[in-house]
Image 1 (cartoon, rainbow, N blue to C red):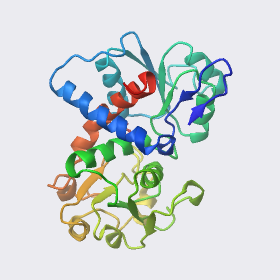
Image 2: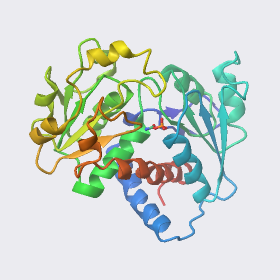
Image 3: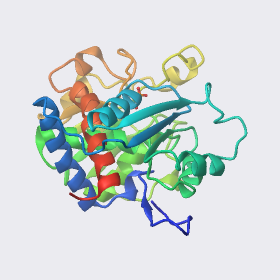
Length: 310
Ligand code: CP
């Protein structure tokens, strides 16, 4: 998304959903992520963003997103400031448009995790600096970017491959559907009854729906799932667990996938619910690389949004 609402500012590039970037832009960011990752692994100092500030707004809790953005900005030579709705004025009635105006005058880039896609879009439309989606109810583009980078590291290009999605239709699935259109791959989707896709969020025909989750995994190059119930809400979500019976990614489902298939999960995970311990801790799982790669792709993303192509 490009914001032009502020007539005095040049157009700003935001990353609010996966479809905001072209394939060429993603290919550039992925290439930069591997350069930046190599520098990090070699203890090479790389500080292109000295005196630049990232503000991170969290309406919901996070481990990976906060750590990867905060550590990443620090490693690029800049600073990161954490705000949540408990210790700030955010979410207490100040119009989101005003918050976007004020915050963007004091920093260089902003990451927002909020319940509403509509909220981040209104915020970004009034921001003078790039805004990155750190997860909303509809999209999780940074996670899918890390997943595609991780696939590329292990198996090469994802173009032409088949990705199985087993679980409810959530922000990860909608970002995967957008990624399928950008990168040219196919999604096999299996969601439990009552947790189906909101078709207003699906703008691609690069997917096939399967009632049986095992059939969705057949021949897949990558099997992907997500937590059924948010951490800490397990008791309240007992009904969900009943509805998801049969949707656990287990050895039987992985056996139906391609012999070189990878398993991914954006974490946190409940072993024995959405994924069997033998799968997430098994040889096809790349979940730790997937988590680490949030750091490297987001550093490349911030560098691109602030400095353009180098
Ligand atoms: N995968 C992910 O976004 O994790 P966090 O909720 O810990 O940030």
